[in-house]
Image (cartoon, rainbow, N blue to C red; front, side):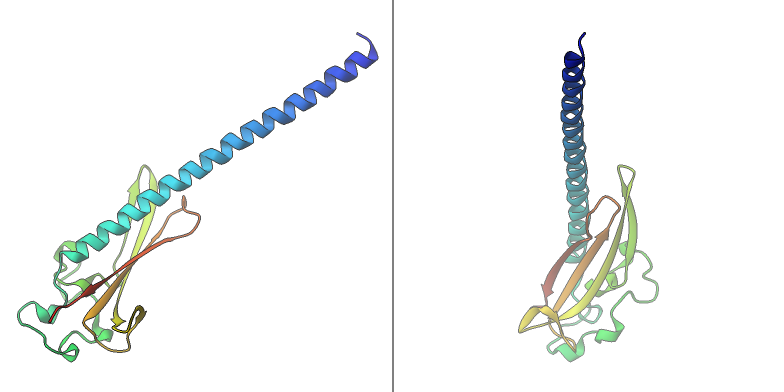
Length: 162
């Protein structure tokens, strides 16, 4: 081979190498995006599961045995959380028992940390926490996982009907 042919061959190998690297890089990036999307779907499913569990509970501990006609009759904001003897979520009998609850679920070998916060919502703006008890409680579920680009946050507001 002559020198010009060698240079052409080396140049062709460099071009082929850079194209191959680019293709493998694209495949790797696509795989990372697919993994991240899968982690997001799992996190959303776990958070929705918690919100569905909350929907099966009473609105408030004090509304279990009687009808509450005024928000002042409900659990004070500072007392939200499980009552004595309610250690696990299967023992929770009202929405605010989930306040402060956390759990790690492992799906497909990937850990998902779930954290729940419950607060009274402002009746005029349900996206804002209220300063006192109202007939609206918001349950917010935050899910962290190494597979997520950022935590997944879902919330739902529940109403106590008079």
